[in-house]
Length: 186
Ligand SMILES: Cc1cc2nc3c(=O)[nH]c(=O)nc-3n(C[C@H](O)[C@H](O)[C@H](O)COP(=O)(O)O)c2cc1C
Image 1 (cartoon, rainbow, N blue to C red):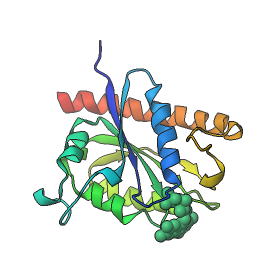
Image 2: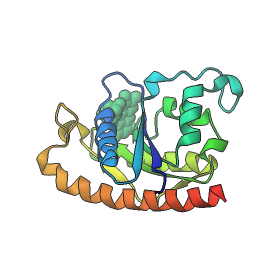
Image 3: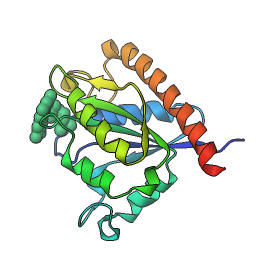
Image 4: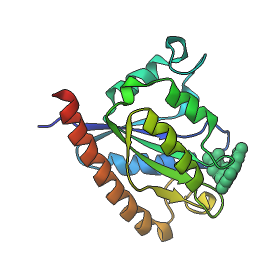
């Protein structure tokens, strides 16, 4: 039997009272139901990144281990001043080789109309330099405060739409994860 593909689902902010953590839990739960997929939930509040990026002192060994093990990434980013959070940049910058030739999907989150689309566009620029292979479409959670129940489950009226979008996006992510893993191992 093939080994499961490991997907690291990354929450994009350390902000207290962050709404985007609900979308992160929802996406992680969705991924856990996929056959042949193992999920690692990454909450940046649980990691410590000292110093500047891309140096040995700036790494958290537990995040290094996750990025080494992951076959794919799914980043859920809120939009802060038309970009993605500095804490997400700092965490991503702590590694480099561990990302290379691995696919990444992105979801944008905001409490207004645009769903974090500008943050996602900005993030695409940075993750290309990390060697990650970015998927050609994304999922967006505008008015995030209206989408989820208190237990992080999705409200019934939004379920069909997001399940359809996530099914399509995960199919693509898993396809790339499988192909690239095979090539990396050769
Ligand atoms: C510092 C800061 C800047 C923000 N800038 C934007 C913005 O440029 N565009 C936007 O749509 N929402 C912006 N927001 C609102 C977020 O969309 C909102 O906080 C949303 O709940 C997602 O982020 P969260 O996970 O931190 O809650 C900003 C929020 C903060 C804290």
